[in-house]
Image (cartoon, rainbow, N blue to C red; front, side, top):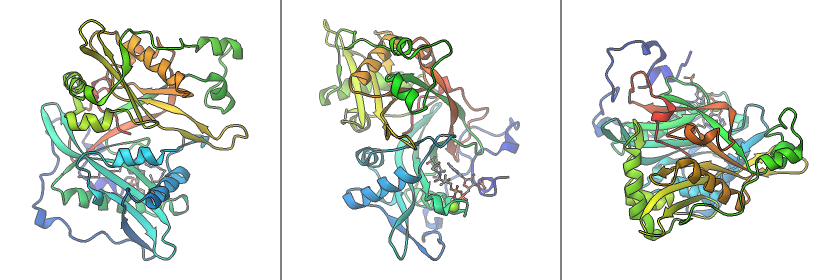
Length: 388
Ligand code: YNC
Ligand code: MG
């Protein structure tokens, strides 16, 4: 059934019931001298291109490939529209490898027609901190679909990851592959209900009028928690301490140090936003919340061309109740003109979703590890990892 995935070191569906298989790596590393030295062959009209994302023209090509060909919802009403600045942030974390930014272009026209990327990360599974690649932005131009190009891209990124002596990876997908470690659902909190209804993202509830709906989702003008403010560079050490202590509670989570926190969580306009609570008395940082910005193109609507969406990222509460903290996150997102605030049911998010008027989305997000078995999988609430 899965001609490609059946050949890969991933949990296979037929092994799901086999309790004798151990947790951890599925295959041992091979000596680096045995890692294939040459790129995998492509169909004759195409060539590999290692992408330099500091090159604005190349970044614009990547932006455009994804803006026209990347992930859509099941009804093809919306398509992710990752911004160039976001792509740079997502693909150039500390110690990134340029060789892992892999394009395919047409030899003749030089047009970029496919892409896959990896970035390095340390991810902990139970007690085991593992160097991994986070694989993302796999995309094949719509005109080149179903020609088995995706397996070539995946094999090539795997080869380049192996060349760095890294043997595991983490990734998410909307499709079911062998075998998810967990399956999550997105929840959506309307901030601009009228627009969301106009573009077909949500519908007016039964026995609801537009004005009642607008009132239902109304939020205060400013955050309510005393000491709630934007994160700054001087907060990196405190945020790292909070986050490390919190993520230790989950079965699978990133192992962030201060260098990672500065990259992944220090605010960047329209890319990532982070807020914290600094106690007005002790000046201690007690709570933290963050979201990233990922607009979607609205396909086929006469009035609107994009939805501005915030995605819940990492949140830590030690003093301010998590629900109150996330209510303040909703308030700042509304102030900044986002149309919707999205969150997965990972970590402790279930504890605030219903109370803060998030509704469940359709469609699921499956989380995967490559060459690492987690027997029986985990629950979304045991997952402390958010991929972009
Ligand atoms: C997918 N999303 O099952 P079988 S998520 C992985 N992730 O193989 P073809 C996928 N595999 O089943 P198309 C996949 N989607 O026969 C399909 N596949 O074994 C598998 N969409 O290839 C599929 N982006 O080229 C099948 O299919 C084989 O032309 C079929 O191309 C697929 O970034 C795709 O959703 C997704 O651009 C590129 O449809 C195309 O359809 C497309 O005939 C819109 O491929 C955009 C989209 C995917 C977003 C993402 C994570 C990717 C993870 C890849 C796996 C990484 C493994 C770890 C590597 C490093 C290891 C180390 C160490
Ligand atoms: Mg293809």
